[in-house]
Length: 278
Image (cartoon, rainbow, N blue to C red; front, side, top):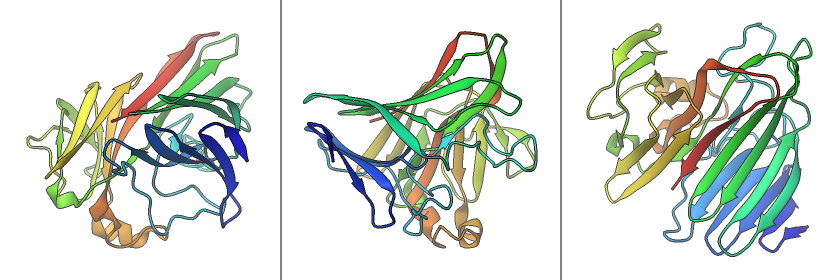
């Protein structure tokens, strides 16, 4: 089904609705299950920016491993054990609200089936994708309540790399909280390389980071965040995940625009968490 000049909808082999964008600047695929960006490739270099696990489950039975999962309205473990980690929108169907495009940019706006908090807190969520020479992902939270509400979340982006041993991350600085090391606060290393299981909440919310490798780099911009999460499961944890190959950690690195400390959103106000991929 054609949605606009450069945007089409199809059904995957596993029965999931997929939005495909192919404009003069870039191509992108988006699963309506989870509002989940699966791929993004600018045509200036035809290099895929996002990593997808070859064992990702794509039938709607669980959240998708790879791409850009949307974590909302909390990041990490839930306050109540019965609730899912990383919120409740990763395993919902989303609907397209609007599509606009021309030769320079395609804009897609979508929202999940529901976004109310337990206890009736009325937060409204919208995901906006701007697809061109770079990909801008805006996660917009509106507070429709008459009282302030607190929320968190992340754009849990999996970046494709040639090999994790070759990667240097530039731009991170200050203190980080080490989730592998019992939440000890450590100082950001320089050079920033990944040599073991890594799960860090970078507390200095810088606006730009680069993933550098021999012969290529990926620029990542952020706004609306209070931290940046850096994650690689390494070999043992990869082997324990049913939707990831044992060596999958070698070709991926998560660098995430995140709200890990929580934001208090006043009545009638909105907040935008943004990640820009160049």
